[in-house]
Image (cartoon, rainbow, N blue to C red; front, top):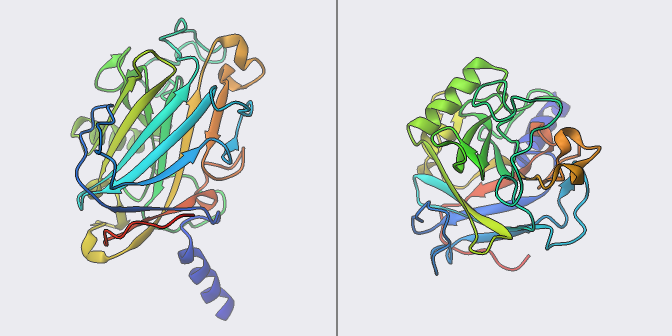
Length: 286
Protein backbone atom coordinates (compact mmCIF):
# COMPACT_ATOMS: atom_id res chain seq x y z
CA UNK A 1 0.00 0.00 0.00
CA UNK A 2 2.77 2.41 0.91
CA UNK A 3 4.61 1.66 -2.35
CA UNK A 4 1.45 2.35 -4.30
CA UNK A 5 0.98 5.66 -2.52
CA UNK A 6 4.58 6.62 -3.23
CA UNK A 7 4.05 5.82 -6.89
CA UNK A 8 0.99 8.08 -7.08
CA UNK A 9 2.78 10.91 -5.28
CA UNK A 10 5.77 10.52 -7.58
CA UNK A 11 3.56 10.60 -10.65
CA UNK A 12 1.81 13.76 -9.50
CA UNK A 13 5.07 15.49 -8.59
CA UNK A 14 6.08 15.74 -12.23
CA UNK A 15 3.80 15.83 -15.24
CA UNK A 16 6.35 13.63 -16.95
CA UNK A 17 9.38 11.70 -15.78
CA UNK A 18 11.79 14.27 -17.22
CA UNK A 19 12.64 16.95 -14.62
CA UNK A 20 12.57 19.75 -17.16
CA UNK A 21 10.26 22.62 -16.24
CA UNK A 22 8.92 25.90 -17.58
CA UNK A 23 6.42 28.33 -16.07
CA UNK A 24 3.57 30.33 -17.59
CA UNK A 25 2.78 33.52 -15.66
CA UNK A 26 -0.17 35.89 -16.15
CA UNK A 27 0.41 38.56 -18.77
CA UNK A 28 -1.22 40.81 -21.34
CA UNK A 29 -3.15 39.15 -24.16
CA UNK A 30 -0.92 39.04 -27.27
CA UNK A 31 -2.07 39.36 -30.86
CA UNK A 32 -1.75 35.95 -32.50
CA UNK A 33 -0.57 37.20 -35.88
CA UNK A 34 2.92 35.79 -36.43
CA UNK A 35 4.56 39.12 -35.56
CA UNK A 36 6.56 39.79 -32.38
CA UNK A 37 5.49 43.36 -31.70
CA UNK A 38 7.87 45.34 -29.47
CA UNK A 39 7.03 44.69 -25.81
CA UNK A 40 4.25 42.24 -26.64
CA UNK A 41 6.00 39.32 -24.93
CA UNK A 42 8.00 41.30 -22.35
CA UNK A 43 5.90 39.82 -19.54
CA UNK A 44 6.43 36.24 -20.72
CA UNK A 45 8.82 33.59 -19.41
CA UNK A 46 11.37 32.50 -22.03
CA UNK A 47 13.15 29.33 -23.05
CA UNK A 48 15.55 28.36 -25.84
CA UNK A 49 16.54 25.47 -28.10
CA UNK A 50 17.45 23.38 -29.88
CA UNK A 51 20.76 23.05 -28.05
CA UNK A 52 20.13 20.61 -25.22
CA UNK A 53 17.00 19.21 -26.87
CA UNK A 54 16.56 15.62 -28.15
CA UNK A 55 17.35 14.95 -31.82
CA UNK A 56 15.26 12.35 -33.60
CA UNK A 57 17.10 12.60 -36.90
CA UNK A 58 20.27 14.47 -37.91
CA UNK A 59 21.63 16.42 -34.92
CA UNK A 60 21.85 20.20 -35.20
CA UNK A 61 25.46 21.39 -35.03
CA UNK A 62 25.01 25.04 -36.05
CA UNK A 63 22.42 27.43 -34.54
CA UNK A 64 22.24 29.20 -37.91
CA UNK A 65 20.85 25.95 -39.31
CA UNK A 66 18.11 25.60 -36.67
CA UNK A 67 17.42 27.30 -33.34
CA UNK A 68 14.44 28.68 -31.45
CA UNK A 69 13.69 31.22 -28.74
CA UNK A 70 10.36 30.62 -27.05
CA UNK A 71 7.96 32.66 -24.94
CA UNK A 72 5.06 31.46 -22.77
CA UNK A 73 2.36 33.18 -20.66
CA UNK A 74 -1.41 33.18 -20.10
CA UNK A 75 -4.17 35.76 -19.69
CA UNK A 76 -6.44 33.77 -17.37
CA UNK A 77 -8.39 32.23 -20.25
CA UNK A 78 -5.81 31.08 -22.77
CA UNK A 79 -2.25 29.79 -22.71
CA UNK A 80 0.06 31.48 -25.23
CA UNK A 81 3.32 30.40 -26.84
CA UNK A 82 5.50 32.30 -29.29
CA UNK A 83 8.45 30.82 -31.16
CA UNK A 84 11.16 32.83 -32.89
CA UNK A 85 12.69 30.20 -35.18
CA UNK A 86 16.02 30.48 -36.98
CA UNK A 87 16.03 28.20 -40.03
CA UNK A 88 18.44 28.54 -42.94
CA UNK A 89 16.16 26.86 -45.52
CA UNK A 90 12.35 27.11 -45.48
CA UNK A 91 10.61 24.12 -47.05
CA UNK A 92 8.10 25.05 -49.76
CA UNK A 93 9.39 28.64 -49.76
CA UNK A 94 13.10 28.32 -50.49
CA UNK A 95 12.62 24.84 -51.96
CA UNK A 96 10.06 23.10 -54.15
CA UNK A 97 7.29 21.32 -52.22
CA UNK A 98 8.82 17.85 -52.63
CA UNK A 99 7.09 14.75 -51.23
CA UNK A 100 8.49 11.85 -49.19
CA UNK A 101 8.85 8.53 -50.99
CA UNK A 102 6.87 6.73 -48.28
CA UNK A 103 3.76 8.91 -48.63
CA UNK A 104 2.82 10.67 -51.88
CA UNK A 105 -0.30 11.92 -50.03
CA UNK A 106 1.72 13.73 -47.35
CA UNK A 107 0.02 17.06 -48.15
CA UNK A 108 -3.53 15.71 -48.33
CA UNK A 109 -5.63 17.35 -45.63
CA UNK A 110 -6.97 13.95 -44.60
CA UNK A 111 -5.94 11.30 -42.12
CA UNK A 112 -3.74 9.84 -44.88
CA UNK A 113 -1.64 13.00 -44.96
CA UNK A 114 1.28 13.94 -42.74
CA UNK A 115 0.15 17.08 -40.86
CA UNK A 116 3.67 17.54 -39.49
CA UNK A 117 5.39 17.24 -42.88
CA UNK A 118 7.07 20.61 -43.42
CA UNK A 119 8.74 23.22 -41.25
CA UNK A 120 6.60 23.07 -38.13
CA UNK A 121 6.17 23.27 -34.38
CA UNK A 122 4.26 20.79 -32.27
CA UNK A 123 2.86 21.25 -28.78
CA UNK A 124 1.89 18.22 -26.71
CA UNK A 125 0.05 18.65 -23.39
CA UNK A 126 -1.17 16.36 -20.64
CA UNK A 127 -3.56 18.50 -18.59
CA UNK A 128 -4.37 15.67 -16.17
CA UNK A 129 -0.71 15.35 -15.16
CA UNK A 130 -1.13 11.53 -15.15
CA UNK A 131 -0.59 8.47 -17.31
CA UNK A 132 -1.72 4.88 -16.90
CA UNK A 133 1.18 3.06 -18.53
CA UNK A 134 4.76 3.84 -19.63
CA UNK A 135 3.73 3.42 -23.30
CA UNK A 136 0.74 5.78 -23.20
CA UNK A 137 0.62 8.53 -25.83
CA UNK A 138 -1.77 11.46 -26.18
CA UNK A 139 -5.44 10.49 -26.23
CA UNK A 140 -6.45 13.23 -28.64
CA UNK A 141 -8.86 15.03 -26.31
CA UNK A 142 -8.79 17.85 -23.76
CA UNK A 143 -6.96 15.69 -21.25
CA UNK A 144 -3.95 14.94 -23.48
CA UNK A 145 -3.21 15.97 -27.04
CA UNK A 146 -0.59 16.58 -29.74
CA UNK A 147 -1.20 19.38 -32.24
CA UNK A 148 0.75 20.84 -35.18
CA UNK A 149 1.30 24.34 -36.53
CA UNK A 150 2.82 24.11 -40.01
CA UNK A 151 4.50 26.96 -41.90
CA UNK A 152 3.10 26.00 -45.31
CA UNK A 153 -0.27 24.28 -44.81
CA UNK A 154 -3.25 24.43 -42.49
CA UNK A 155 -6.76 23.15 -41.95
CA UNK A 156 -8.32 26.58 -42.45
CA UNK A 157 -6.13 27.87 -45.28
CA UNK A 158 -5.14 24.71 -47.12
CA UNK A 159 -1.79 23.93 -48.72
CA UNK A 160 0.32 27.07 -49.01
CA UNK A 161 -1.10 28.84 -45.94
CA UNK A 162 0.42 28.55 -42.46
CA UNK A 163 -1.64 27.48 -39.49
CA UNK A 164 -2.97 24.66 -37.37
CA UNK A 165 -3.24 21.06 -38.45
CA UNK A 166 -4.77 18.08 -36.70
CA UNK A 167 -2.05 16.16 -34.89
CA UNK A 168 -1.74 12.71 -33.40
CA UNK A 169 -3.26 10.20 -32.97
CA UNK A 170 -4.79 11.02 -36.36
CA UNK A 171 -5.56 7.30 -36.80
CA UNK A 172 -8.35 7.75 -34.22
CA UNK A 173 -11.38 9.35 -35.85
CA UNK A 174 -12.56 10.75 -32.51
CA UNK A 175 -9.24 12.54 -31.97
CA UNK A 176 -9.18 13.84 -35.55
CA UNK A 177 -12.73 15.17 -35.17
CA UNK A 178 -11.90 16.83 -31.83
CA UNK A 179 -8.82 18.54 -33.24
CA UNK A 180 -10.72 19.72 -36.30
CA UNK A 181 -13.46 21.18 -34.11
CA UNK A 182 -10.91 23.04 -31.97
CA UNK A 183 -9.38 24.58 -35.09
CA UNK A 184 -12.68 25.51 -36.72
CA UNK A 185 -14.15 27.05 -33.53
CA UNK A 186 -10.86 28.81 -32.67
CA UNK A 187 -10.48 26.99 -29.37
CA UNK A 188 -6.89 27.02 -30.63
CA UNK A 189 -5.35 29.60 -32.91
CA UNK A 190 -1.93 29.68 -34.52
CA UNK A 191 -0.28 32.08 -36.95
CA UNK A 192 3.15 31.67 -38.55
CA UNK A 193 5.01 34.00 -40.92
CA UNK A 194 8.42 33.83 -42.55
CA UNK A 195 10.75 36.52 -41.27
CA UNK A 196 11.47 39.42 -43.62
CA UNK A 197 14.44 38.28 -45.67
CA UNK A 198 13.84 34.63 -44.74
CA UNK A 199 16.18 32.57 -42.55
CA UNK A 200 13.39 31.66 -40.17
CA UNK A 201 9.86 32.37 -39.07
CA UNK A 202 7.73 33.62 -36.19
CA UNK A 203 4.97 31.41 -34.83
CA UNK A 204 2.36 32.39 -32.22
CA UNK A 205 -0.07 29.92 -30.68
CA UNK A 206 -3.12 30.35 -28.39
CA UNK A 207 -4.71 27.49 -26.42
CA UNK A 208 -8.05 27.99 -24.65
CA UNK A 209 -8.25 26.54 -21.14
CA UNK A 210 -11.76 25.33 -22.04
CA UNK A 211 -11.92 22.94 -23.94
CA UNK A 212 -8.20 22.23 -24.38
CA UNK A 213 -6.95 21.85 -20.80
CA UNK A 214 -9.26 19.28 -19.20
CA UNK A 215 -7.76 18.49 -15.80
CA UNK A 216 -10.46 15.91 -14.96
CA UNK A 217 -13.46 14.57 -16.91
CA UNK A 218 -15.61 17.58 -17.76
CA UNK A 219 -13.48 19.93 -15.64
CA UNK A 220 -11.24 22.51 -17.30
CA UNK A 221 -8.38 24.46 -15.81
CA UNK A 222 -9.23 27.79 -14.22
CA UNK A 223 -6.95 30.13 -12.32
CA UNK A 224 -9.33 29.60 -9.38
CA UNK A 225 -7.62 26.21 -9.04
CA UNK A 226 -4.31 27.92 -8.28
CA UNK A 227 -0.90 26.94 -9.60
CA UNK A 228 -1.12 23.77 -11.69
CA UNK A 229 1.50 21.45 -13.22
CA UNK A 230 0.75 19.84 -16.58
CA UNK A 231 2.71 17.57 -18.87
CA UNK A 232 4.40 19.28 -21.81
CA UNK A 233 6.55 18.49 -24.78
CA UNK A 234 7.49 20.67 -27.75
CA UNK A 235 8.87 19.64 -31.12
CA UNK A 236 10.54 21.64 -33.88
CA UNK A 237 10.52 19.96 -37.31
CA UNK A 238 12.76 21.04 -40.18
CA UNK A 239 12.69 20.01 -43.84
CA UNK A 240 15.31 21.33 -46.24
CA UNK A 241 16.25 19.94 -49.65
CA UNK A 242 15.27 16.29 -49.92
CA UNK A 243 18.87 15.11 -50.20
CA UNK A 244 19.81 16.74 -46.87
CA UNK A 245 17.48 14.33 -45.09
CA UNK A 246 18.74 11.22 -46.86
CA UNK A 247 18.45 8.18 -44.59
CA UNK A 248 15.92 9.81 -42.26
CA UNK A 249 12.20 9.05 -42.14
CA UNK A 250 10.46 11.19 -44.76
CA UNK A 251 13.82 12.80 -45.54
CA UNK A 252 13.40 15.06 -42.51
CA UNK A 253 16.55 17.07 -41.91
CA UNK A 254 15.90 17.74 -38.22
CA UNK A 255 13.28 17.00 -35.61
CA UNK A 256 14.18 18.18 -32.12
CA UNK A 257 12.21 17.69 -28.90
CA UNK A 258 12.25 19.59 -25.61
CA UNK A 259 12.26 16.32 -23.62
CA UNK A 260 12.19 12.56 -24.02
CA UNK A 261 14.13 9.96 -25.96
CA UNK A 262 14.38 9.73 -29.77
CA UNK A 263 11.87 6.87 -29.90
CA UNK A 264 9.73 7.67 -26.87
CA UNK A 265 9.29 11.44 -27.01
CA UNK A 266 5.52 11.24 -27.64
CA UNK A 267 4.88 9.14 -24.51
CA UNK A 268 3.29 11.07 -21.65
CA UNK A 269 5.84 9.58 -19.27
CA UNK A 270 8.72 11.19 -21.18
CA UNK A 271 7.44 14.77 -21.11
CA UNK A 272 8.51 17.65 -18.93
CA UNK A 273 6.33 19.98 -16.87
CA UNK A 274 4.72 23.35 -17.43
CA UNK A 275 3.47 25.15 -14.33
CA UNK A 276 0.57 27.50 -14.94
CA UNK A 277 1.09 30.15 -12.27
CA UNK A 278 -1.56 32.49 -10.91
CA UNK A 279 0.89 35.08 -9.53
CA UNK A 280 2.54 37.58 -11.86
CA UNK A 281 5.88 37.12 -10.12
CA UNK A 282 8.50 36.52 -12.79
CA UNK A 283 10.97 33.64 -12.56
CA UNK A 284 14.57 34.32 -11.58
CA UNK A 285 17.64 33.20 -13.55
CA UNK A 286 17.97 29.46 -14.12
